[in-house]
Length: 356
Image (cartoon, rainbow, N blue to C red; front, side, top):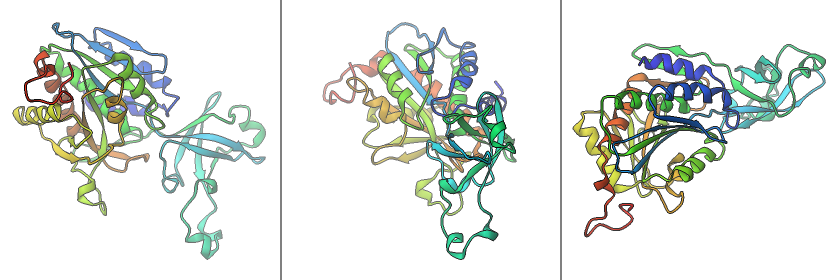
């Protein structure tokens, strides 16, 4: 599997939170190459089942595939479009961005604001705010309203870019890079035997409410879960303790909300398989679907694997492709190593460590 080609294909698709339907069929078609059964549920979660050899235990692997976006809020009489955000977009990264408005047809536009030459000294020192930005399509009011309505969604223009030293940049790598890693894991599983049934779920609406992660984990009710997402890659002026090196493998989260037994087994497996990894210390909530998954039903033992990503929530999110391959290998080897014995309660082990 050529993972860079997969990345280009997935990031060229446009699917903001709640509007993922254009991406779901692409992911489903990839899952069908490997899985025994593939479904797209009512919300748009794409779920592929890789059957095991028969213990009846279920492992869930999740990665969200929605992206940040914008929403048309108003159109003024000159045809300029005001907007609000879907997910956590910082307004300062939007100025001069190229976008696509998804109305009756796709309309390209650029985001503008009052030029600095025309700002007062007081306004020039202010932080850019969303209400000061607008989209210019080149159309007047009469023309633009034929194609665009209030409530239409907007995405950043996809321009996938291969950089030197195996780096890749694009919008929507948060979190379609993790979806690519799931496909890498499925490729790896072709040559591995696994006792448990493994469900791979590309989930929706994580950027706004983790809706997909909540419903998928409830529906499948797995015996344990592996959540795959991104973490901050090392960048200038970012503290080392808040970021992780790109090209040195995924970050395995440790902390009170991650299952101790399976996290230790995951780390041991990475060591045994000589897979590069880093440790992500998470003292509280992780800001990922790990929370949505672990509190489902009566509780699901959950581990978290994160891919280092620079410039998160921008049009130029950047990663090292080697980390995706390492992540896929780790997911597959770890999932294949889990047996029914891992879920059995042992004398002296608290009941919450294992789920019977």
